[in-house]
Length: 437
Image: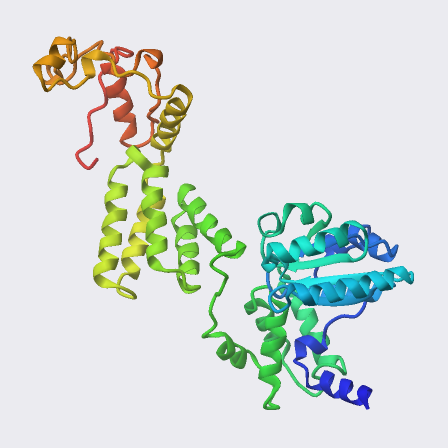
């Protein structure tokens, strides 16, 4: 009777669950770690699987691979959810594994969403991984170097799974249409299969779910039905996760690389995925000073104005404002000289501490202070045409230090020429400023 219920449950399971591969040879699209001669494949076939962490985006087959690894070895597979399970449940699994080991058996403990493991759970697990009571197989969408206890991570090998290529997903879909476990009665145009594969964003589970939904009414699946299924899709990601920070990184680096097209693309990805426009604007305000600086001081004005415009207009009206700001920052001349100067000044303060303010720069609001020599010898630049040559403004131990080194980009070229002239480092006149700059 139990077998009957199990078979019924399997029949009613979602397509993605029914189509999980059972053997290593059935896994598609992860040749980088499972191809001929690859370490993980060799370890599995030798039945010498160590503790591992499988790391990659959703739908790349981490849970599937964990089950396959158990099937390919002589170990017992035990699953534990870092979200739903607690320490008492974990201790029961570990006690069973310990007894199994005493009898000569081995246990693979699969921990799904291991990045959500709290410290108590990790501390409870660590000694059992160390002494071999369990072989840990963790799955996570987050970078394990940030999400997993360093002590636990040092006992495991990390294998990264990549998003599946459209060709691999199309292969999975065709298998689902021909396999008795899948949808053998469904009919789909090959162009529709290819369309699903391209629209699923490398997520096999999503592709299989869409295929199952489209096959539900018994009609042949064509490209138009696929288009309708995906036209309202969202580009969701965990705002605290790797995918979020990867897209933000691509956005910043595209602006830094002066590519307005890529900058717009990544910015739209962020907004479409649900990022707060204020977060995007904040990044652009930071970028205006950090990566453009005095090469084009107007960049900061544009970024702040965009932020103010968004506060007044809201979305979607402010979409064009964000796009204008993004493209302006992308094509503006770049300089990180201000950023570097700040870091150098900060390092000098940390290295030398609170150095004494030179007497000629000290405040002298009272006669007593003046009698002590405060402010004595100070030369007022406006009395000397706007610049008093030869005056030292840094504390004596730092005299002659240069923190700010203007680049030759944009307006900063003129700033650099002016500084050189004031310092007596060049007799050449600075270039005449452009009225537009």
